[in-house]
Image 1 (tube, helix red, strand yellow):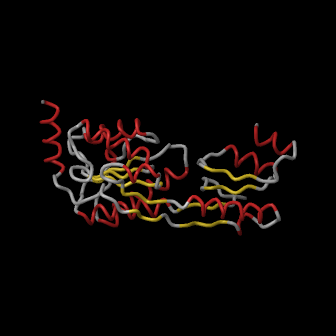
Image 2: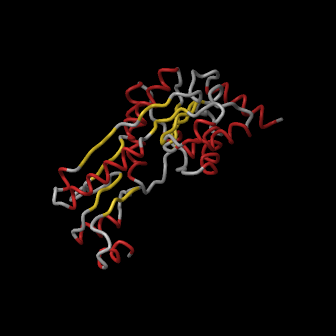
Image 3: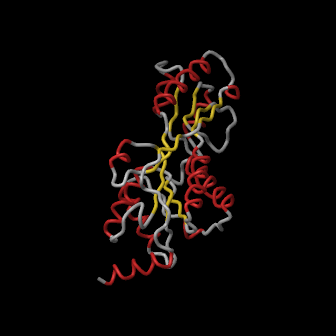
Length: 245
């Protein structure tokens, strides 16, 4: 309704749409009205869509192979909101990383979707309660990953030593976690500049198919991902002992 009102009142010549969904009503509405728009992300049906996006799937693939190279064999993934396109893409990258590392996919190692510290805490606890818990967890978003620190502390574990964590976004808070959060960072300023430039081109008549760009995320190495100190069985035994104290 807001988009239609702005169009009808001639208050906007075009739109930048962040956090795009698989089925996005904003895209459907603007496409039907032939109003220029650029997505910061992708959507299930790309017809008539222009976008700038970060290759989150590549980041998740790299995170998985990185943890495997450190010696982790039980690697979990906590996705973002199920309705968002990026969530599906990052799960895809995680699965590709497992395949590249020669590790089997276990659906039990896909945690509950999490976007906040609270939900990240809950998802981490559920994964660590598995009979064969993961020794490493990859989070689709940093803020959920920061919830893993809270869960680990409550369970008598230390991030980086007992459970490794890698995430995505590069939020400033990650640098101040203890240990610092290893993450794939996004250059938001650069993204904003490209989105604005591409939208101007779209408004001036460039076809949407000519305005599609993907950029990489940048790995920021800190202390939250290290070689496993415990096997999954040893981690399970330790957690059981902690719960009996």
